[in-house]
Image 1 (cartoon, rainbow, N blue to C red):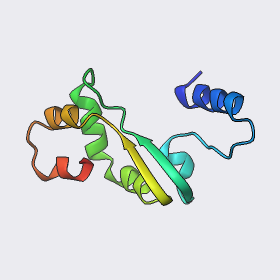
Image 2: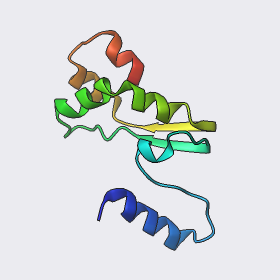
Image 3: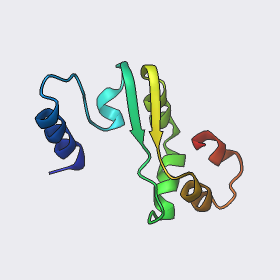
Image 4: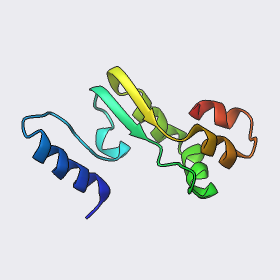
Length: 96
């Protein structure tokens, strides 16, 4: 079972009448939502490959960040992103 499926199941248990959707960026392409919570899945134990994947998939990040109608909440560890970027200049500014 994947993390999005587990989260979806848990939210439906806690808030059975909610209109919460959980999934990858691909699931929401072409849709808009009132609020989007985006996890970059980057933290102190992340590998450089995690940062590189985000950096190399700007189109997907653009999809995620342009879908909220009211609020975008981004979860990530700014210090870890800075460390993983190894001073790559403007690349990190897009995430921060």
